[in-house]
Amino acid sequence: MLLLLGVPAGAQFQAQPPATPPQAPSQRSQNPPPIISRTETVVVPVTVKDSRGQLVAGLEKGDFRIFSDGVEQVISRFSSDAVPLSAVVLVDDDLPERAVADVQKSLVAIAAGFGPRDEVAFVKFDQYPTTVLDFSFNNDQLFTQLKRFELNSHPTQIIADATTAPPTINGQPLPTATGIPLHGAKRAQSTNSLDDALFAAGDMLKTRGRDRRKIIFLISDGSNSRNNHHTFEETLRSLLIADVSVYSISTTRSVPVGRSLLQHGASELDKYADGTGGDAFFASKAQDLERLYSDVTEQARNEYTLTFSPQEADRTKDFHSIEVRVEQPGLRISSREGYYQSAIAVGR
Image (cartoon, rainbow, N blue to C red; front, side, top):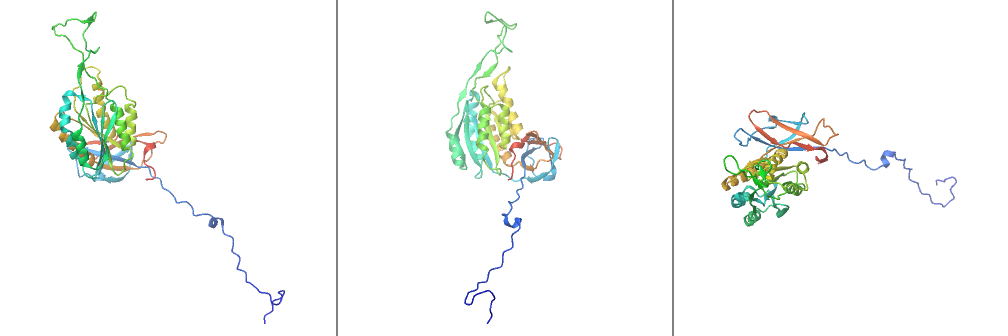
């Protein structure tokens, strides 16, 4: 028998588990949070055309160079694949009388330019934008809405302009040397708020996915009122932040003499297109409009896509310019004019 000293007879003995050594501080703490790599990327759709205005296909990544604020950037990703579209068809609902018939006749042809992977909204505007059809993949639904839509128009009036009107005495014009009285300039009496309409269309597109090409398909004579809530600069900034390109089709280029609303607006169609990397077209006949509708969607869908992470960017300023070059002579390049540091994708 084994006797344990100091333990009364008949007492039960329980073995104690060995003591657990204290854990090091690093062992007691929870697993460390994962390391998140934040990558700032800028996506730049690029259109390349030859001297005849035809799209140029077959270019490779090495054919392109991209600069931001004059500093060459590394192209991290390149694609020439066709991209599905998210589009707002934005139609001026206060066109001059001479343009209404041709635009009305051609509108249904817009639907033919979109495919089953494209989502399209239809918005009309004059003083205010109004959504006729929200985003839909149903091309038949778009066709039906375009067919039902009836355009409004405004007359063109003759209004005296101080830059062109003849001298007067007691309110009566003096006779001219030819005996033919001079007239004031033709002014488009339009209340169209072009800037506000584009701002609203861009706002609709900003939540669409980055895997889609976001465009505004604008049909207008370019007239623009002075009563917009948003300025040109504010609207252009909002479009660049949302990665939206404007493709404008002007229904008239007959800019009257004098400081007219039409003259002011016509230049904005080009500026919005140039600034966002879209394009501007002109057509006044129904058959030309129908051809251009398909040209717009083909061009937008088949742009090259360049992506870069900004290097050596001056973080003290928000806007940064973009310039794209192609290493082949005689080609015309269209791309967005810049990006905003505060808006580029983070952690995607």
